[in-house]
Image (cartoon, rainbow, N blue to C red):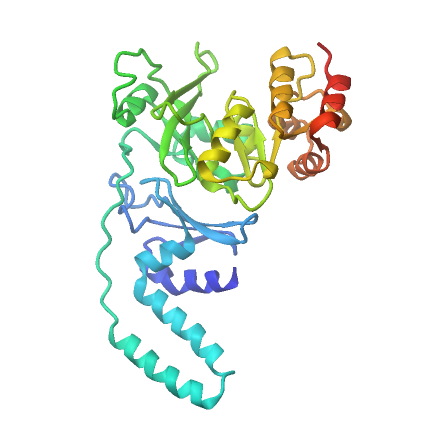
Length: 358
């Protein structure tokens, strides 16, 4: 973390409108990849965000949608500074080495520095998203009001977007014209990009911001073979992965994804296609012991060999994680409960049968 902080501060003067949002956690600036907003020179949508779960920084732009680890961003867009940093680090290690080793290494350093090249202007990254149709969630008053009302952590806002023309946004992303003849709601919505582990967009989900909307949630998939999963592009596959039902619920937990109404069959797809270990997953579906559908999907997850959460010991009537947070239960307590109250196999079946009320 501290090396990356020093690296961030070493390039801050190259980044327009650079400012500290939260010391050692969040930094904001105009994106140097896409040039940021063309409508306002005062808007700054590039961020360096520290991930507690990964113990490292990530770069995210709400304008062009590019998301990278800071290490990748630093080496790709500031190659000279990155080289100098590596040399500086190597020299510090070198001081502890025998004199003969230091002499040979010095020659290598001088040769390396002689091959430095000037930084070329970076080409804008093409995301396939029309920036007139999508915006950072904090730039949309109604969307921002909605996520504040739902108490979504500000550290997770970079994963969210908003649009005033959902249907047009879907059509702009629909290269195969799957939805060309479909009548889609062309209204204001909170937007979730459904990406694979490499950040490729498989689909899009929109949550209506108008409480009177006929269709509250809309999901459009461009890759029919992929699942409707949210959050795959930001997980650490070496750590425990929590799978929730809804996308908003996943935003309160570390290393979490959402199946968006799907079941554990979709998790099998993830494991087989992205080389993820099934034993890393904990299925934390909604707290609905009276729902036949929820009980069926939990039973299916157990049959497929997944660990599942049984909520009976939490003593709450809240139906999902977001409701729990809104009721005053901390996300830390919820996550701790999930990690310590999950079951598999016969024990999971027994727990499920004693909990369900259908």
